[in-house]
Length: 149
Image (cartoon, rainbow, N blue to C red):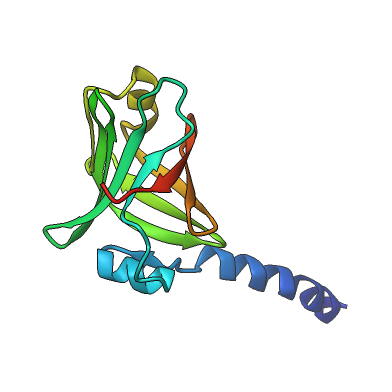
């Protein structure tokens, strides 16, 4: 009888154990990002196309002192946020992850954004084809297109 219960619960325990200890694929440099994406021509600069104030947010991904660095600048207003961190693959999406010590919020950041990200967080990145990227936090999202500027 006990063997029957063990065989019943074993798949559940293995699935739970696998999820709890699964190591996501993450990139900490631009080179690692290219390898993870499998696309060395992934644009590193994106401009928001869904803003409602006529001032697009521009996101740049660069390598700064050997670390992946993301910068968000609000057109006409200046720095929104910048952060060191990693970008991790999560199923079909990606997440830019950072802690509170890694992010710096600029003068263009709203109080709501400051409250939401003061202890760190993540940006969810969802790619749509080759020319659109949705970037989202818990309190905001926008659609971006690559830019050569």
